[in-house]
Picture 1 (cartoon, rainbow, N blue to C red):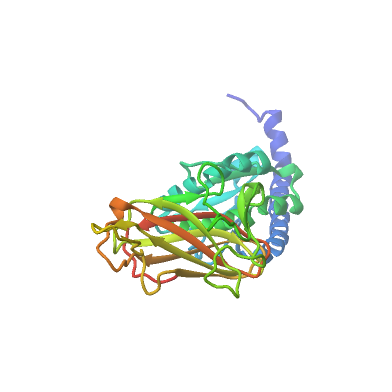
Picture 2 (cartoon, rainbow, N blue to C red):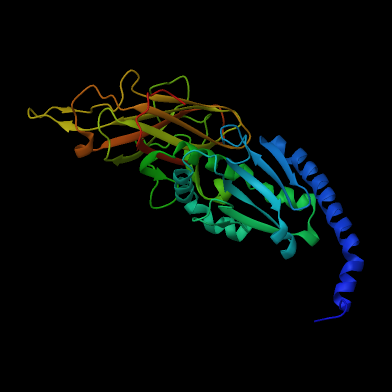
Length: 355
């Protein structure tokens, strides 16, 4: 047992007030940097919240309407420093699925699925790890505190412009059973040709999310679909798929980019040969047969989708014979980009209508 404090303890006592003062100053300065960060990220279309728990934990969150983050415990992109992080000299940032997010396990599963084509790029180009088993920092990265600047945080947050629409798609797909999806890369790609022509449609190698493939549609070029001769219209055949019964709640979900906006339509039909040799193509939908989705004009990527009921006017069994899916577009944009398209049905029946 020591009769007096060691020199180490004496030094600690001498420096204790300085350390406490420096810690408080650190959080004050971090608060100022977070406020500057909010000013630069919010114009990208994100709301934000700033939390400080004394001199122990400090964070800023970015989110969009519909992310259920009013309490700070929904879906959000967070930058934070806690006691452990301070000891390790790092700021941690990433995507959180908080306790107040309804159906967060299903949303997590949807995120894992739709982020799969981008995981390698996220890691190699942006230093973000996808952690499939984690609700906190499902998407994870860090910055060294000693080298931290507002510019470095802004650079990290730029990934939000591409993560944002994927997060919104995951919310849309939380109760979904996917039947077919394309991310516009081999081997699953739509056929852009109709009557031997591709119109204004073509595949692009690296113009999609995170530099991946996509479809570019020149809405001012001659279309390949003649139903609307005065307005260039393009059509592509997606696939033939099973798994849909008449009356099912079905959906189409897309990630698109267009500064001028436009309209897309979704259509499905079967094929039936009658005993007398006649052929018919039962429609998946009626009144209307083509399901329309309006694409607002925006500068960045966005998620659009529709939920409807399959209401074919026949007793055709789509589960046995399958349904062939088509995707039609009209736009004045010469650079209308389609990153991904997904079709499926919902576990929970919906009342129908465009969302």
